[in-house]
Image 1 (cartoon, one colour):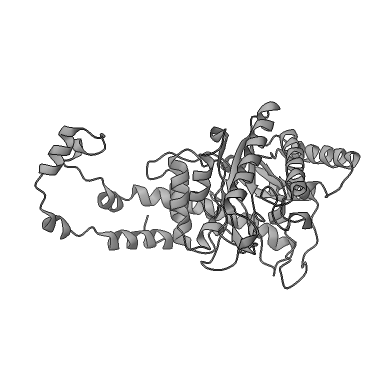
Image 2: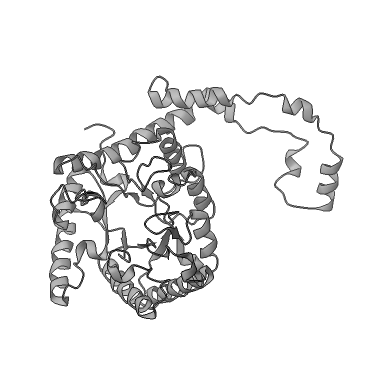
Length: 392
C-alpha cells in the first residue's frame, strides 16, 4: 500500500451527487448510468473514503411516500454500518425544483418560503437520523436575474429570519448540529446574494445564534471570481468559523467546473493544504475534507472511481510536500519572523498613550528598510521546486 493511498483516518468525504454525477451539462444529456446510493457508499469505502454526504433528494426522491422513505433510509443505514462509512454532513436541495426558480428563503412568494422551511426541517431530521453533525446551506437560487424584483435588504432579512428559525429548530430538537453557509459569486442566477466567504462571515455576525453558524467555502466558488481561496479559508479559520470545506479544482473566470482537486492551480492547492494541515505552525483544521467535484464527462464508471482516488491521493501528496517545504532550512530562514528589541514591545500589545508617544518619536531609517531585499523570488522558486519533486 502506498503512503498516498487514502484511509478512513484521512477524513476524506464525497457527496452522493459528486461521484454520482452522470455527466449531464447544459449542452448534453447523461453519459453515465445513475448510480444507486448504496453502491456509491460501498465503492467509496473501497477507495478509502471515510464518509459520504448528501442532499435530501440525493437519497430520497422528491415526493416519496413516508413508507418509501423509511425503506430507503433503513437500507442506506445498513450499508453505512456494513462499510463503516459515516454521514458527517447533510444539506437540502433548494434549487432543483421549479418552485425555487426565484429563490427559496428569499423568494417573494410566502408559499415558497414556507415550503423551503418545511423541506429543510424534514431534511435536517433525515441528516440527524443519519448522524450528520454539520448542515450546509448553499443558496444557489437566492439571487436575481431582474434586479428590480426586490430590495436586496429584504432578501437578506428573509434569509436571516430563516436561519434564525432553523437554528431554533435544531436547538428545540437537541440535534447538536452546526450550520455552514456556502458562498458563490455567480451562477446559476445572474446575481447571487452573499457571494463570498467574507460576505457570509459578516452575515453570520447578525444572526441570533451566530455561535452555531460558520462557513463552508468551496475552491471553485472563490477562484471563479479571481479570489485567493487560501486567503478566504484563512479568514474563516482565524475567527473559528471554518465548519466544513468543499475541495475541487477550477480555472479562473470560468463557469463552475468542479474539477478533480489539484488538477488546476497546483500552487494554490498546495498553499491550501499547507494552511489546513497547519504545517507552517498554525492551528490545524480537523473537520471533514469533502470533495465537491465530479469526473470528466469523458469517463465511464471506472473513470469515476479513478477520479475519486485522484482527489484523495493529490491531497495526501500535497500534505507531504507541505511538510517537506516547511521543514526546509532555507525556507525557514527566509520566512523567519524578524525581531527588533526596540520595536517589538510596542507592537501588538494594544494602545496606550506611552506606546503612542514612543512610536511617534521613534527614528526609523525608512530608506535603509526600503532597500532590503526580501528573497521572495527565491522563496517562490523553492515552492516550485518542492512541487516539482526536485527538492525535499
